[in-house]
Length: 247
Image (cartoon, helix red, strand yellow):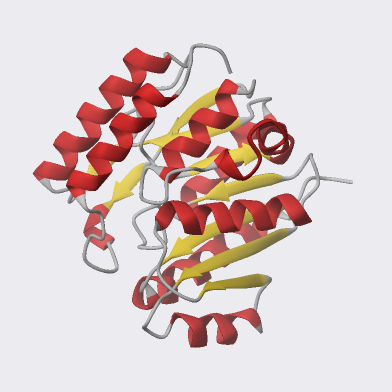
């Protein structure tokens, strides 16, 4: 049996962006002839995300999971990953992307292709050759470049330059391997550093890491930025020094 695809969207008050993004994902994936499920984790939204999910679930394979209160991006990502681990098979694929419409679904097939080539953890990169970014604020650019430079020096994953981006794909068996080792601590960081936390954990547990270029569309962002820069910097610094040299 061929692999199935799970697409995970952690979301907080992104109703407007999701109205465009989810149908776009569905439109992109349908021609691929792959069985897929969208997993929308609503991190305590107070807008119309719940009503939208109910409407869209009648039109496409969409699983809706809701937090009673906002817990942070990393916590929502963790909820979604644990749901996938309970429902997916080892050969299946998980793709994670932001719910604010900055990550183009058109790049999902490139992530899938990389996984099918034998990689276990693949990150999108707008700084790789062929990638680009539109509309990213200067301070956000500085934070991203600085953090990625530090992670490259610290971890040196072959072929990987982007560590802080949330647009990624994983082979489920590699997620399972990391979960067997780390359990509920697979994602410790509750904020935006949670995606980097997961990526590092999975690769350090033996997954082959890869990277594909994509176009970051910050100019299409559905809502104001929810990133709190001081706390995010602190979380990234914690990740840099948390791990020992061995997995």
